[in-house]
Image (tube, rainbow, N blue to C red):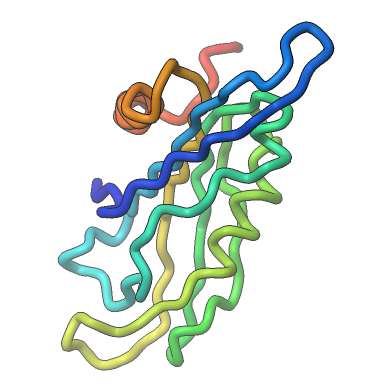
Length: 150
């Protein structure tokens, strides 16, 4: 599993009736599950960590999602679909929008071909600092992305 090399922590200023100007720290981790980075034809041309979706942050939602990504022979994203997520389907719209915005390049040295990828996005919110939010997200990304309910 390859985590994105970039780190971006989101610092939000949220006003609530109970507590004004509460600081909220968040992080997003990107993991390429399949194919492995070594075997992949297509790599993201910009490896900066995606922004935490505002709608998720405002609602205090964290979780993970696994997405199937179809990349065409020319490097354009053909289709993105949710495979699974926790919480169920809440992360779908934000994850698909994030992945569709990425640009891909063939940096493998192999002939350009269509490729299917499995990508995991972990959205993590909470902690008393940027460093704590990043640490929480790295831990979450190391765990299975599945619900324990059932």
